[in-house]
Amino acid sequence: MAIEASVIIPTFGRPEKLCECLGALAAQSLPSEMYEVIVTVDGQEPATLAAGEAAYARANGRASLSFIEAPAGGKHLGPCHARNRAIAAAAGNTLVFFNDDVVPDARCVERHLYHQQENDGRAIIVGDSPWRVHSPDSVFSRMLRETSMVFFHDRMRREPAALSMDWGFRHAWMLNLSINAESVRRVGGLFQVHQSYGRDDDELAFRLTRSLGLRVAWRPDALVEHNHSMTSREYIDREYRLGLGAPAFAMGASRCSLAMFGRDLLGTSEIARVRAACESNADTALRLRDWFLSLEHVAAETVDESDITTAYNKHLPLKRWHWARGFVDGLSACGAYLATCPAVSPSLGESTVPAVNDAC
Image (cartoon, rainbow, N blue to C red):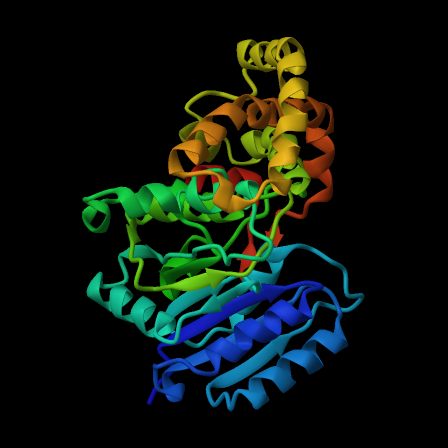
């Protein structure tokens, strides 16, 4: 029986979470001959390799499990490079991408494969990834789970026509996603536009939807649990880092950036607008900051659903201000990001910034 699905997991510095993920992958409903698991270590972490192998063996994993270590020197290059090395080694017709901090349901890989076959490989399949509830639970954690602070799963779950819609490239998150392998290789794999934070999966999905006509389909039965806890400070730092990388992203993947934001981030008037907003909204953001940080210490059960919605809407000026502040700081560093970020996918062949923009 041929390998049909290649499960790809990049990992860095989280052996305990990786072990839980591998334990779940050892117990998949799909026959073991039909899928393989490829873990790419972003750096050199022999302890992570040993722990992962032991966890998979304890769970009686029978599907092929392989580890790809970092190139000589063990430099930390980020999940984009790690995934590309796994893509080059993958044998399956379908690539199933997981983060190392998810715990797949027993039927998850089977459902991804089923939905890919159902769509003749012409869709990017996005599965559901509800956040794990940690104890003690807080209002802030409920906001993460129940609103669009990080992902838009809440909207997808509520939409009556969710299963028939094309959700577009902005909904293609690689924590739980599958794509036809040949399609990924045809567009050159993932492309790391900058060395700040995020947007690699958006950019790949943009090229796949625009160049090859793939649609983005929501299939909640391809289910994982997202075992990630985030503090309120980490959340606003994440927004800052997204803003920090936005100028380099707009320069290196201009057409994707324009489609994502609906405006030219590097236009003179837009830069002036963001600078002005960053300055004029600072007092409002700082007033909201203490309130927002306090939500991490308010028990989740003390509020109802309407309170969560109210808190979400109230926090938006703070979220946007941190993004804008990062954007302003990122403008001066934009050239440095691109200069230090190799625009080459070493396992999939050469790729340059102009080539990616042409593909977009």
